[in-house]
Image (cartoon, rainbow, N blue to C red; front, side):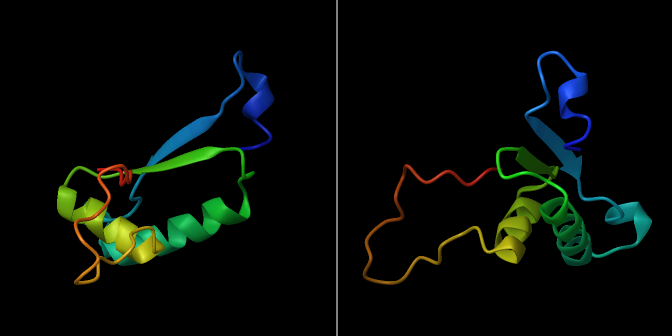
Length: 88
C-alpha cells in the first residue's frame, strides 16, 4: 500500500478492507480479523488510516474485541464516556 500512495493525486491516506474470507469463504470472523490485521500492521505506515468494514454491528463488536480497541467498562466507573469513538 505504501508504494502506491504517491501514484495518486491527492496521495492515498486511508483504505478500507472487508473481513476477507469470512462468511462464504468459510473463515471465522476472528480468524479473518487476526490474519488481515497482522498483514496490514506489517505493511502499513503509522500515518495511514486503515478501516475494517463489516455489515453487522455484532461483527463490529467482534473486531474491536479481537483488536483490543475497546476499553472494558467496570462497575462503579459511571457511564462510558460519550466522546469515545468506536466505529460501527
